[in-house]
Amino acid sequence: MYHPRLKGSHYEMGRKMGEIFRINKAEFPIGLDKFQMEFGRKSAKILKKVFPEAAEEIRGVTDVIGYDNEKFTSWMMCMGCCMYNIDEFQSVEVKGCTAFSFNRNGKIFYARNNDLPPFLKKVCKSEYYEPEKKNRFILNTSSFINGEEGINEHGLVAAMTFVMPLLEEIRPGLNSVFLVRYILENCSSVAEGIVALKSLPIASNCNILLTDQSGSMAVAECNPGEMNLRLPMKNSNGEDFIITVNSFISEKMKRHEPAGHNTYLSYERYQTVLNALKSGCGRNPTEYAKDILSGRLGFMCQYEKKLNFETVWASIFEVMDMKVLRAEGNPGRKCFIEDKRLKS
Image 1 (cartoon, one colour):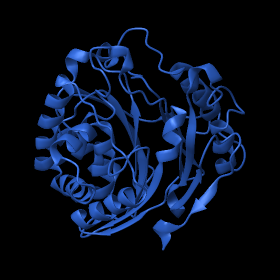
Image 2 (tube, helix red, strand yellow):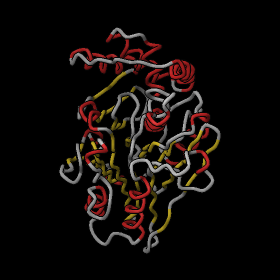
Image 3 (cartoon, one colour):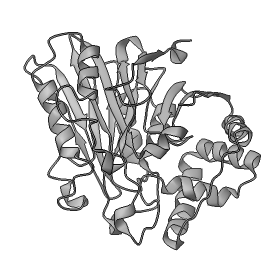
Image 4 (tube, one colour):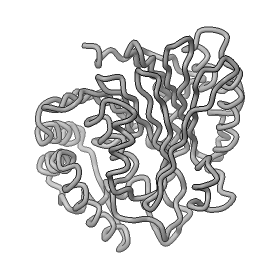
């Protein structure tokens, strides 16, 4: 993974990222069909209105690399909801991730496996952000500017998981990875994150997991027309935990996803974490989280090679202590290393 540090105005941070792309001769062979381009343009206008700082950051990138800003922004707005050929619905960009939070003896922990096609491993980043007059945060991403998960200086965790949409329900708006970025940058608690989600136009199905240092945790099951707030369950010790995978868990929201769809064994992964957390871990909670993520307690990251899909990174956040641990690769084979940038 790349580990850029970005500081200053959003435009300056975008220019710095653009310079990284320019120096490394990054290529962006963006090909959008008619539906994607129209969706992207409309979503870009919404981004500029509700999150203008992110639009400025994208402009900083495109000014440096000399790419058409409208097309580049449109491409970024399609991520996670209508990428690739929309006429072949099965080729919508898929992320097969698992995330969960739990309370152990009054301390709060968050953990995640980020599962993607292996070719994306080369472009994954863990970005440290220090924007002017905004929250400092770490953002882990297979893209840039937007991201799959992170934690900010207030100890607020935000993370997304992809949920397959119904084509007719996709609407111009913010995709899940921009929702994560917005919350990390602008919110300091789960309550504030929920308020933000209720106010923002959401483009497509997704789950947004939120956790903070007070012990508050929730999963917002999001759709452009409806949202369901899922609250934590309790284990045998009366401690809270919550899980999200690549489906809606509530009966209320299931009608918004294709019937019978099981994105990369989403249900199996959910059951593994549920079984592990409902009894309460009887030992070091960080080590227990590692065991869950690495598949020692059931199916998690043991994808068959023919699927061409794997865990490209895993994270554990000890939320109360602001301790960030990350395994850059399959957690069954890679060690977790502490990332101290948010503490500096």
